Length: 269
Image (cartoon, rainbow, N blue to C red):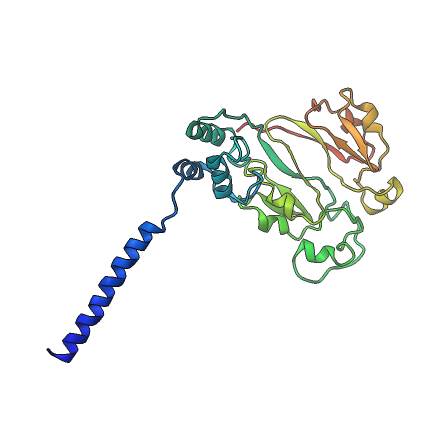
């Protein structure tokens, strides 16, 4: 036999045997697929944000499939509609989720907040914060370099006049911006109904806060006394509104001497 033809036959035979062996091993070593978990993962939004408390969409789907959790309403980006679809697949009760949006609780714009230095470094809030807390005098305020913008998978955040601003129409409450912000000044607030919010996280005493920012909360407690629903409490010199109790009556806004409180209008989706 021609040596070249013989070599070709040998190589072809080895390839055929290897292919058959791989086909057999793929059947023997195949990992069983959880069809329900796969179906749940299909209806999840794919943000892999971890807001559900699991590693991502596949982790949440696997937990539902294995019975590790029976809660169908853990996906904030998916909302009530996704909860209904999961419930149908798993044969569980659907949950009703109140639409939420992220909100940057700071109004320390370039006009309102004083600066203690000029930062000239990496465009990163986390990096700037490590250098004396950033260029603004207020150590609690928005750095404004856009770490939250980069983290948002829905392009819902932009930097406006030195402060991050969230577009509630685009926000899906995935919490990625909340987990990214080094100053921890982003919270979730109701999207579908109006509620008051204190746009300040400064825990310094009033005199110091007023020196740093013209619209900071000075801890005067006037809003606490003005609220007829008892929805406002002081937390270490800064007021906090319980959105669940708030009726958006505006009494706190009228009583705040610095303008730190705003009523956030609800949106109709």
